[in-house]
Amino acid sequence: MGLRTLFGFVSNDVAIDLGTANTLVYVKGKGIVLNEPSVVAVDRATSRVLAVGRDAKEMLGRTPTGIDAVRPLKDGVIADFEKTEELLRKLIQKVQSHRFLVRPRIIISVPSGITEVEKRAVRDSADHAGAREVFLVAEPIAAAIGVGLPVDKPTGNMVIDIGGGTTEIAVITLYGIVTATSIRVGGDKMDDAIAQYVKRAYNLLIGEQTAERIKLQIGSAFPLKEEQVMDIKGRDLIGGIPKTIKITSQEIRDCLQEPLSAIVEAVKDSLERTPPELSSDIIDRGIVMTGGGALLRGLDLLLHDATNLPMRVAEDALLCVVLGSGKILDELQTYHKVLMRSS
Image 1 (cartoon, rainbow, N blue to C red):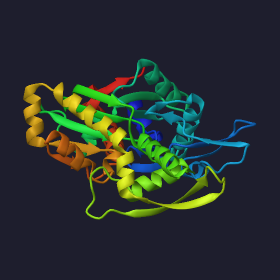
Image 2 (cartoon, helix red, strand yellow):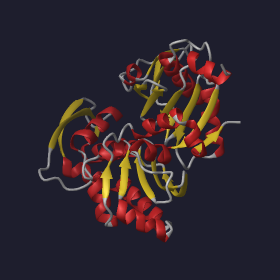
Image 3 (cartoon, one colour):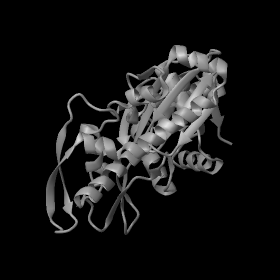
């Protein structure tokens, strides 16, 4: 029995979609086993990690002075190295049945526009968190594989992956990216735009979780058949007391124009740089949208209106990247060309 075969019996190799908003973990042979918010709660005095994931997210904006609840990733990349390492370590420990009898091999999806320094930070975090071997894969390729697009064929496949921190747009053929556009605009920027609008228009201060809830409940990118109204609660900036106001879906759509326009321009830019032969494939096959941001109501209609191309939101839009990373993990020999191996 070879060493690699032995390692397979005593370690759970994992694929991780390390997202700004959520981290998803896929274990070889088991599928997706974890889907947790990318949040870490730390004791400020001792630097001890108190909670990660969903438990830590519930603390956002609600902690006493001695506890920090933070999101260690910003715009798709690591902003706090130590807390990202702790997040990865805790999540890997949750899924390791043999508790590091043999350290796992890990595939992590990263933005296509990531710098060499940012790649190193991701690899080092995974190494320190307990990885035996670390591979990186670009999020658009992982998403395309997760959707089931024929990335191995000489045909153009276009993917728009809209996450919490970044929007990744790529044209993929023969296991490689032909054109890629990566902008640091995603769900977080939409939440920020909503919070800033409410503050400016109503003198009301709301937290990021409230802004996200507004986006999910009444947010849209295209006019709705029936406009909606929502009650929101926050702190009045003038009186300093809690206050409730009503806000409409029309207002939210208007305040989302800036981040949505940036996504539309990035899609147009990527299409302009696509070779003509692949452009004809995209006309025939359409464009696939993945990621949590793709679920914003009417975003597919907005992009279709701007490009006149068929748009399709993937069935499991939130899971496409981790499913693709998991498929790469299961079939490393087939997909080794799409990986960036750690040194």
